[in-house]
Image (cartoon, rainbow, N blue to C red):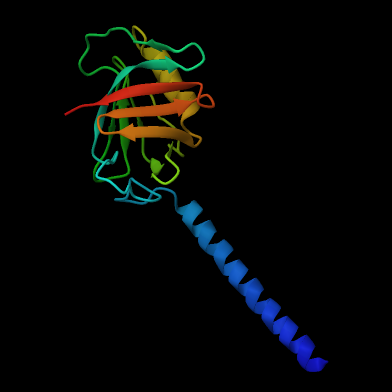
Length: 173
């Protein structure tokens, strides 16, 4: 009986130790977040398609409930409504019309097709012109939490509002 009890506790102890080690590893993985020189966290893509080192221009805001794409004014502005994912540091930058916004950290998980800006989007208190304030509000209030995305060749869809809306971007050369 003593041998059975000793074996039970040593086995349980081993299982508990393995469980605690797994929990510690998971905690380290989630706690690290963005690391210097690694803007893409999670699993790297199986293909050459990646957000790292890319720049995107907004086509419009899609409302999935009514099936309507809204283009923001001014439409003829080349550098308005753009976003860029840095290739070297874990840095993200966007521009409305006149106001630039940024995040010092972003994470992408290609396995689950999710993106997050865990430290939020930093922007100046200044108001923008045209539809710039709408664009800034979407970024400020929706991308701190994990959000789904779709990435295909030269098209990027960043979903928000429980996938009822998305920002549609075309890749810039």
